[in-house]
Length: 153
Length: 153
DNA sequence: GATTCATGTAACTCCATCTATTACATTACG
DNA sequence: CGTAATGTAATAGATGGAGTTACATGAATC
Image (cartoon, rainbow over all chains, first blue to last red; front, top):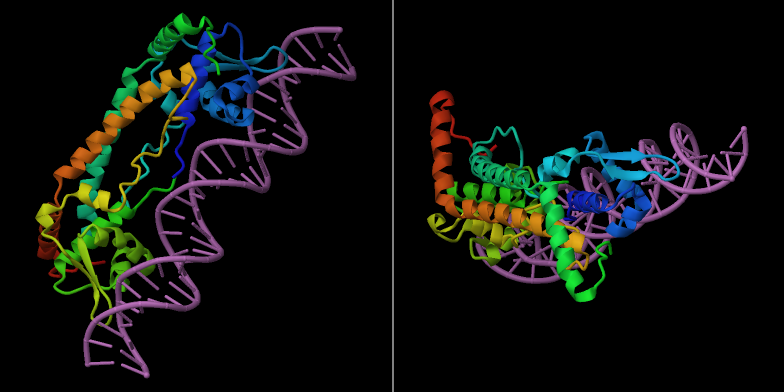
């Protein structure tokens, strides 16, 4: 199935915002993310409602970070997007009357829940500030070779 | 996203087959699984190619288990189905030239891989024989109340 | 105030994937 | 041969992310 790339896009956008002094427009973000500006706005809307970013209309407007990124985890971003289901697989029915169904679901559900819990726990351990630091290290490493600090494209 | 229920269906079908002496037709399985017979055949085709079940054509034909279920794990069934992606989320691109992309993917990829590994490890720990035993316990437990051993619907 | 530039959002299309259905070929049994 | 089953292709339906168009709203600049 088509993978949901909203979390990846949102993180990408946040790191870009963190590197820029002023607001960044959806158009610019769209170019960075290789995505449509309207899709960018749609995705960022969740982050705005969660208070992670700010949006300003009109000339000179755009998106900017609204919180200290050391207090925001990747899980927070996932939650801001509505906490969409992480898995592409699932059980056939949630309230089965069939005993076979119950036996199967019992086993699958436990495994799926464990894996989801682990994933969310891992995402909670990573702050956006850490991601930003990681990014800066990569920029420096590349800069030593190319003398250009252009990580936007 | 729409969840992939093939693993759940395949397990369900295998447990039904294990409880029946002779072959079971796709029609019957479809009734048990609440699924279309053609879809049943399509799903079971993977299990047949993996040697987990046998299919016999013609009158009196149908599906039957081809291996000792104590040697088959849920992970084997998942693999027999082609090992479809377990996740609905993913990173934006696999070979990114963008440093921001790399930083984001680095964090997400690790977490996703860990969760997938845990899930597959869990599925590997569960044999179909164990699921079948679990099912029989449920049948007995219900049988005490209703005196009917009909777990098929 | 008019213009311009930005977000906000609805409505629609495009695309991929699972599922359902139809149709027909193939094969085995009586 | 006729019936009953699998095997499989082709097509449609449903869902959901992403792309696109269109328009309303709001803010800065002239």
